Amino acid sequence: MYCAYDQQRDSADDIPYLKFGDGAPPQAFDNVMRIKLISSIIEAPVANQGCGLKLKDLTSYRACLACFPLHDHLALTFLQQKWMRICTLPHRQPEDDIKNYFGEKIGLYFVWLGHYTKWLMTASLVGLGAWTSIAALGNNPDSPAIPYFTVFMCVWTTLYLESWKRAEKRTALRWGMIDFEQEQQSRPEFEAIAFFRESPVTGLQEKYFPPEKRNPVLLYSNFVSSSYIVTVAAGIIAIYWFKAWLSSPLPFGKVYLGKGPTDDDEGGANNGTFALGGIIGSAMNAVQIQVMNTIYEAVALRLTNAENHRTETQFEDALISKTFSFQFVNSFMALIYLAFIKTPLAAAGQEQRCFPNCFQELNTSLGIIFISNIVSGNLGEILPPILAARAKAAAESKGSILADAGVKLTDVEKQFIAEEYDVLMGTFKDYGEMVIQYGYCTLFVAAFPLAPLLALVNNWIELRVDGWKLVQMHRRPFAVGAEDIGTWFSFLEIMSTLAVISNVALFVFTGSQLKDWGWLYRVIFFIVLEHILLTVKFMIAFAIPDVPEDVENAQAREDYLLSKVRDNVADEEEEEEYDTVEMVDLSVKLTDLVPAMDAQAVKSAMV
Image (cartoon, rainbow, N blue to C red):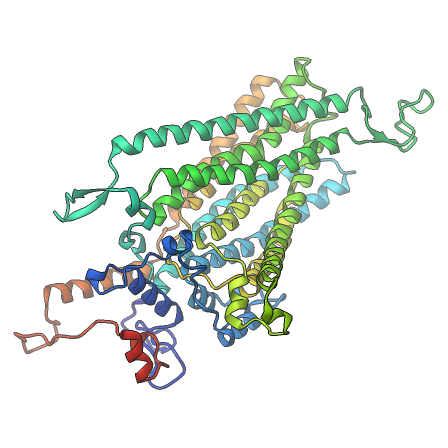
C-alpha cells in the first residue's frame, strides 16, 4: 500500500496499488523495480535459481571493467526538463520522478534537501531583519534585535525537525519503504569474512561476526578516530596562536594594508590602514577544514570497512558517527574558541582582547568559513567529474585505430567513461555537507544573522548542481532503498539542542548588552533562560506527533491485511467460507523484467 487508507476515498489520484507505464495494459514494475530485480537475480545463489555472481567482486578483481544500468535517455530528458528549472521552488521538485529513476535513497536526499531549503526561507527573512537592525546601528553586533532572533531560531529548529519527521514518514509510506531496514540483506563484504552460527530466532544457519573478533577492531577504530580529533583540535589552536601573533601589536599587527601606524593619526586609525592578521588566520582555518575533512574521510572509510557491519544501514550509521564527530570538531572548534574561550584567556593575559567584544571577529570568521565552504563545495562537485570523464575518454581513445579513423564512441561506451556514482558515499558526502551547514546556520547565528540567507542561496544552487551532476556527469547508479535519513537526523537534533545553549551563551557572556552585570548574575540568568528555552523546545517536540495519523492508519491497515492473508481469515462481509485457496504463481519471469524482448531473445538468454 502506497498511500493513506481512507474508507471514503473519492479521488482516483492516489491509488494504493501502483501500476506503471503509459501502455495498455500497464506494467507491474517500473524501471527501478526492474533494475533491483535483475541485479538480485544476478547476485542470488545458484541454489535459489540465481546466477551467483557478486558484481562488486567481479569489478574489484577486474573480471569485468564495470557493471551499471544504462540510462534511459527519453525518461532522463523528461526528468531533466522538470527538475532543472531555476525558478522551481525547493519543495516542488519532481520527487517521485527522481525516485522512480534513481531509487529511494537518492530520492529521499532530494526530498530532505528541498524540505530543509523551504524552511530556510522563513529563517532567512527574519535573519535579514536582524542584520538590518545591526547595520542601522553602525554595524553594532549588540543590536536589541539579536535576543529576539535567538529565541526565534530556537523555536525554528524544533519546528523544522518535527516537520521533517512527519514528512519523512509520509514519504516512506508513499514509496513503500516502511520497515525497509528490517528486511535488508547482508552486505557482500560481511559475507566474505563472517562466521556461521545457528540463529537464536529461526534456528537456521546465518552469517555471524562474534564479539571477540569485533571488539578489538572497534577499540582500535575508536582510538584512531580520537587521535585524529585531538590532532585537529591542537592544529586549530596553533592556527589561532599564529593569528594572535600576526595581530600584535594592536591595532594593526604585523601584516596590514596602508601606511601603518604613525604618531600623527593615533596609530594609523585615520590613514586607511587595514589589518590583515585576522583575515589570514580565518583563511588558514577555512583551508585546514577542507584538507583535514578530505584526509579523515578516507581514514574513516577504512576503519568502518574493518568493523565488518552486516547491513548497509549499520555500515552507514557507523561511518556517519565517526565522520560527524571529527567534522564537528574540525568545523566548529575555531568558532567555539572565538565565542567562549578567547575572552577568558584575554582576561588572564594569555590572549589579545576583543574590542568591544568578540562578536565582530566571530562574525568575520564565520562569514569567511561559510563562504569558502559554499564555493569549494560546489566547485568540488562539478569539476572532478568533468575532468575525470575527459581524462578517461582520452585514455580510451589513445592509440586506437578506430579513433584515428574517426569512429565515434557508442552510447554505452560514453556511459562507461562517465564517473561512477557511489550511492553510499555520494549521498553520504551530500548529507555531511548540508548537516555541517545546518550547524553554521544555528550554533552561532546570533553572531551572524545572514547565515540562513547564505545557506538558502547555496541550497537553491545545490539542488540544481546535485541534480545536474546525476543526469549529466555520472553513470546511472543502482537503485537502493531507504526508509529515513538515518543517523544524520540524530546529529541534527543534537545540534539543535546545542544551538539553544550556544546562542544564549553568546548573548549573555560574549555580547556587551549585559556587561554591567556581575559574573554570578550572568551565570544565573544564563541557566534560567537556557532552561526556559529548552523546556519550550521539548514541549513543542512532545506536542507534535512524530507520525501523522493517516500514516498510522495506513500502517495498521496494512498489518491487518497481512494478518488476514497469513492466517487465511475470511472477510467479515463474506457469507461463504472457502476451504481451499487458489495457488498464485508469484515468480518473476525474465519477460516481466524486459517486456520488449522477443521470444527468440528470451530463449537465448535462458540457455
